[in-house]
Structure formats: structure tokens, C-alpha cells
Amino acid sequence: MDFRVTETAVSTSEAVVNAVSEQPVDGDFVLPEYCPDIASVLKCHLTPTVQTRQLSGDRLTVEGTVALRVLYLDEDRRCVRVCEFSQPFSTAFSLPPLSNNAFFYWNTDTDYVNCRAVSPRRLDIHGAFTVSLTVVDAVEREVITAVEGDGVYTRRTKLACTVPAAFQEKPFTVNEVVEQGGDRHPAEMILHTTVTPQVNECKVLQNKAIVKGMLTVCALYVTDAVSGAVEEAAAEIPFSQIVDMEGLCDEWICDAAVTATAAEVRIEPSQGGETMLLSVSAKLLCRLYGWRFESVEAVCDAYSAHCPLQSETHTLSLTQLYAVHREEHTVRQTCELPAEDVREILGVWCTVLSTGMTGEEDTLKLDGRLMWCMLVQDSHGETAYYERTEPFFVPCADGERDDTPQVQVCRTACQMMGNGKVEMRATLSVTRRPTRVAAHTVPRTLIADEAAAYPPDKAALKIVYAEKGESLWEIARRSRTAVESIMEENHLSEDVLTADTVLLIPLC
Image 1 (tube, rainbow, N blue to C red):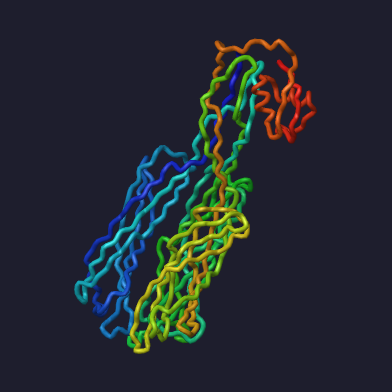
Image 2: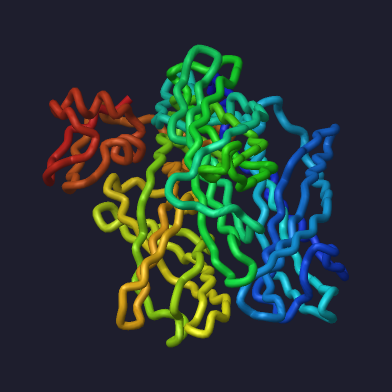
């Protein structure tokens, strides 16, 4: 028998690279001359930052800096001191052939860090961090969209997905000086800073997008090295960037991410000395991802009235991104003070350890764990450092699931409540990208087995007793006739039977 098969290429979104590179950090570090001797190490923070990437053929080189910040006590144990070191790092990833629109996602995570003072002036630091890379690209797959021939019947399904259409990067800088209200004191040293860029809006225009957001800066600093007094400065600095992207239009989904590749924060008095100024110079990188929708009607099943059709099938896993949600939530947690003799909490900050989503629909919530870091002073004026891990959750009222939400800590605060309790608050910036993943099994090939041709039917009509819930497609396949003929003969409008029925089946 003769029939003609029409094939069409459909693009699917696939992660073509999922790679992780572990980077060690080992060293013997000597304190700068201006730093006092070490009496006790409180904490060592290891912070890797990707600054540049270079693509050359099938090789991607990622370069950056790992910053080591050590908090320690001097001999009086009243003041927290800080010393900083930095090391460059570089790692390379092998890549398969990619399109020009492939999406690059990278992330850095601290695995561990150990720090000990081998003398009052020397530190032995060992640690490790990972650089992870994911590359998402559009991959073409052939599907059968039509089969034409006498006595061949097909069933079709809609294949829909979102695929990478354009990727663009734009570096930019934010330089701002923000006056700090209240009775602030000059800074002798900065203990801890966070510089968090947060995208609030991504407005799509023709061939470009306007990305707006907020740069949240928090700095914890010592004002008096004798007493160990600590103050905090904070600022929210808006930013806006126009990023060109060829082909971008209203029909696409546009996603933006901004990361800080370098930042310098200073606290200094104004020219007249009346107020304190928070000076921020940050290098930021905006990454813009353009997703376009693609859909096609593909044949998912076929049969012939004349002979069996042999088919080889394959399964397509299609991902459809249908929204980008950006929200801000405040998490409040009340817990015990870390020690009985806490007189004052000098400062608090936290980091996100893990995130996920639990529940279904109306009970859907984002949950995870926060690592709280706390500097406190006791009634004798001695300073101590504590860490504790606490769970958190925020409800998702829209019921749209994203199992890998992006969560950043923008601001933190705490308040002693009495009775040995402390309330800690964290403002979280949450970005969710809900997706639907559908697996479709469709024929890759169709071959007529003419050697096993069906014998001709002797009757033009037969009677079939069908049960509620049966599909007319399966009944037509068994009877080797058309679904439309059964529906017309029996005055039916739905493919699935709603009651037990006696059907008249017209035969070819």
C-alpha cells in the first residue's frame, strides 16, 4: 500500500551540559602589619565569585576570585577584628556543539572552610568550593505531522514547549554615596558586608528589555576598637538598564538575572563631619534570557484499514516555562539566645543553605533553611560569635510550582525579646520560574506490513457493545474504520463514551 509521511523538526529545550568543578583553597596566610595579634579565631568566610567567562570553540573558561574573610578576637577579647585575603581561580568546561542562542547558567557554592591560628600572626586555611555550569540549548527532533494514504487514520496531539531564543549579557556599574541618618560614628573597620542585586521588573520592548531592580547594601562595622562597639549601615540603591536583544517581542518570555562580580563598600564622614556616608562601588552583570514558544500538531498514533502498521516510537520530554514570579517575603523566627549572659547583640546576618517546595496546589509552600550568624557581647564586655540553622517557609498563594526557586537574603534584623528570647527577621527576595514538563510518546517511523494484509470485510456494517469510558479511537482501530464514520453513524459528538452504548460500526 502507498502512503506518504510528512516530518517536521520541532525544537526542544534540553540541558546539554551539567558540570561541576571542585576548586581547593589551601594556604598559609600572614596578617598584615596593621592587624593586631590573634587571640581566637571566630569565623572564616570563603566567598567565590565568577567575574568573567571566555568561550573558545568547545571550551568555556570561567575565571574569578575567592575571598577569605577571617573574624577574630584580639587579646582583650572585646573587639572583633577582620583580615582579608583573596586568590584568583580559573576552571574550564568542555562543551558540545551549541547554537548561538544557548543559555549559560553558573553558580558557586562553598563546600567547607577550616581556619586555625598557628601563631598570633599566621593562619592556616583549607577549604573547597564548587563552580557549577548548566547550558540549556534548543535541540531539534523530527516528528511525524501527517500521514496521507488510502485507509490510513491518524491521531494527533499538540506538542508545546518554550525554547532558548536569545541570550545576552551586559556589565554595568553602580556608584553611589548614601547619607546615613541618626547619630552614626566613623568606622574603624568593616566586619561584614552584603551587596545583593535584586531584579524587580523586566519590561519587554521590541528587540530590547528594560531591567529595573534594587541593590541592597548592608555593612556591619566597628566604631570603637577599645570597647568593641559595632554599628550597621544600610542602603537601597535603584538601578535600571536597557539590554538589546535581537528578536525580542511580547510573545516571548523574558527572564533577567543580575549578579555582583565585585564591590567596594566604605563608610566615611561627610565633608563637614556632621554625618556618615555609605559609599558603594559595585560591578554588576545583567544576564538576559529570551524564551520563545513553539508548538506543532504531531501524529501520536496511526493505523491502517488494510494491513498492520509497524512503528518505532520515541519519547519527547517537553518543558514549558509559563511565568517568572518575583516576590519579597519577610521571615520572622523567635528562638533562644545562644548563651545566658548575652547583654547585647552586636550584629546578625544570614545565608540561604537550601530551598525547595512542598505541598500541592492550595498548600504549596517554599521552604528551606537559613544559617544565622550572630555577634554578641556578654555582661563582661567580651565578644563571641554563634551560628544556628533554622527552617523557614513562605506560602505560594498562586499554587505554581518551581522546584528550584532562587532565594536571596536582602536584609536582616534582630531584637532581644526578654526571657532569654530573640526575634530574628530576614527579608527574602524570591524568584520562581514555574514550568510544566510533559512526556509525549510519538512514532519515529511507520512501515506497512503488507504481507499480513487484512482479509476484506464481507459486511458493510457491524454492531459493537461498548462500555462507558471507552475511546472511539480504540473502537475504530479494532474495527479498522474511521472515528468520524462511527460518530456520524451514531450521532456522537465526544470521543469518549459517557454511557454503555450499542454502536453501529460502518466498515470500509
